[in-house]
Length: 595
Image 1 (cartoon, rainbow, N blue to C red):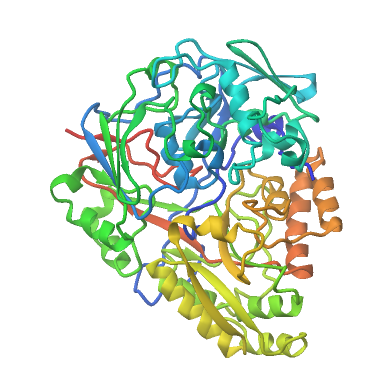
Image 2: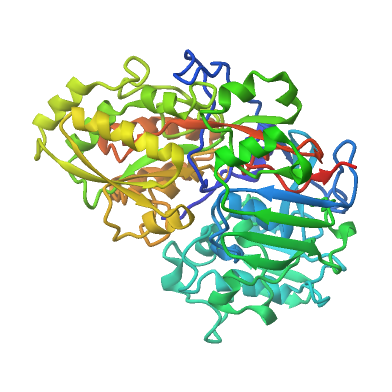
């Protein structure tokens, strides 16, 4: 199936584009819209959500330097504290928001999003002079590289590097990352069509007439290809320094910083890249002289350190550590912390996927949906101020033409309908089933697991809980031949359309692919292709919503998960801290150290 996107012309006509990104590193999701305080006593009010605006920038917009945040100061050392180190540093292996967000410090791509003001963005040329030039009805895209863009050793970034970058994403060792461009250049099964450049074979569909010009020739029109190239997974890798698998641990910088040291799972230090020129970069401010990254801290520890705000922690922040449930009432009720608290509902969709290769009876999958303890999970997560209870596959805040429905009664019985679940189990092929539930081994998820186990066992379903290593969680559930029946996964639209959700999470089945349910039905694939091909955007949006409900009714391939709301603190001497609406983590591009 060809995965295609809503056209750039339609995006611009819409005027406002809700930005999201692909996989999320932790349970994340949409804002709460109603409900009383949870057991934690946290206030029930959730932050309002205004989708950010994005327009297509010009060549002038693509020039550096980046637009500075108010009160910016250059220099100093900033410390980022978080729980996990990054599983991948090779951009081609990155499809998790935390990794692509961090990589803005060391990697650059052809295009990217320029922050014009808070909530206002433009798609611009990053390494390219502009956001690209389409021709042949959108089948051909041409980019020209800027003068003065260099690697960390001072050598120029060339069109051959760009061509090599895309070609290497076809290699067998690349098992993560986006696949849009690869499919557009070849076919849906892109790794069958081409295995990468390492054996000397090259892609004719990518042309490099000179060192500055790169031409992509797609099989079909893709008027929004410049949006795809803005994804972190397509950041450029130098041909001369490509070490294949080893590159994932020792990348070569095109961004404002170089990795000075890295003790895996403990720390990382960044220093300035002397060959990065801010005049070429409209996206990255790179205001601190140095970055210290500290790993291995749980959310509770991080919150307590940032609340205390003492010594070096005054210049510390976290990319994604949200205030945990046990501290949320204290933090939300303390007015002194308000200037240092960032709040943002997630733009992601979040799901507990069934492995349809193992959980084959739809009656069992429906029973689990009815028995699901949404309210109890919300309570242990911190209440309505920390989590919402969505009912649809598509996110209400990032889907144009969204229409609500509640197939499994989550609004009327958020605590779960055990009797309905028992009825469905009695009609199933196995009235006393056992399921293997795999979960990310985090403190809150340990509590959530107990809640899920308790609810499902009340319905007559035995649950075997399997904790997974937090660092390699997605790698584990991403194996097609995994040994789990049910597991959480997050997904965000790469553009605000069902075409960037449904054909992906119910698309090709392969190791590392986001179809974690392994749902495969030619009839469903045909419907998704038909909707993707629609030229009437309003009709397409309505069709995606209708398909949303049809998928839940016919297949029940997942349980819609409780969506999180970020409540994130930073130190008193950290300036420019904003939660990026695309990645739903704090952006490094505007961070500075106050003097």
